[in-house]
Length: 375
Image (cartoon, rainbow, N blue to C red; front, side):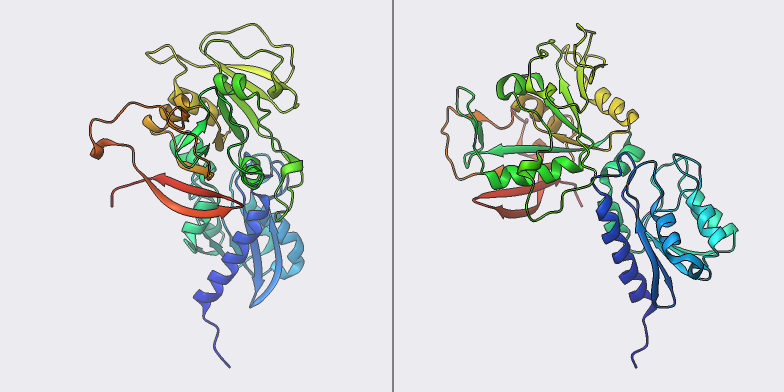
């Protein structure tokens, strides 16, 4: 009989915990998605994942499933168990009280105020702790939470829909539809993972979008999250141009109008103003906005905006991921460009992104790129 490789088994169980964690990607915000598997010997005796903020964490669900078999068992957790009282009691205490013998952690808590505390608490209780199993995979699961904790700003995705010649609309602004229904359906999946959707007043006035996750366009190949949480809609409106009649107010999901000075109160109860300091050009300071959004527990920010705001996000190094849906249409040189930004002094100083994924979405292509970092 082949002898079990402990390291291989650890990887298998952590992979299983990561798969469980993914079930909460669209429902746990502002908390991270976390999964837990409990084994006794080679038998899985309990597993669980975090469903929603305010509800039990993954470890508690797994311990309940394991029952008395948790005593002397090993727990595999995708994120360091919490040691502080937040919306729920500390998971460390639950693991200690259950008599767990060993805990395998994929990654430490990125919150610098508590990072390592849970691990130390478990060790102080005599529990063996191993850290770093499938760490990269765990980090990629919650980029927004990590960004908010370590950089004090959300993780920003800039989504674009373009023609084959990188235009977003005809010269008169008509853009419906450049990409296919397949691409628009794919967008719903990513919108649902975001805490908020950012746009500008010009886009709201030109396209009059709702900026919601549309159930009728949800990808048929993916299960609909329960409950479906609509993202906050955030509109940069420095000139107070957005009025109460736009379709963004049709949904009861919150709308935050970002301005530099207060304006006339909206008649919609779900509309709120965010007053952000102006930059030297009198526009909303984007870095200041990002700090405020982090303070309001926004982890992932999905951006659908015009060329000027897109260019500003890129030039101010506030874009963590580009997601470009490209169709086969050609709109010509009079079409509206996808990005409006200052020309770099030379090619060496131009913003540079690394393409990490390219795939066919119906008749269109989806390209994903992240900021290029020098090795």
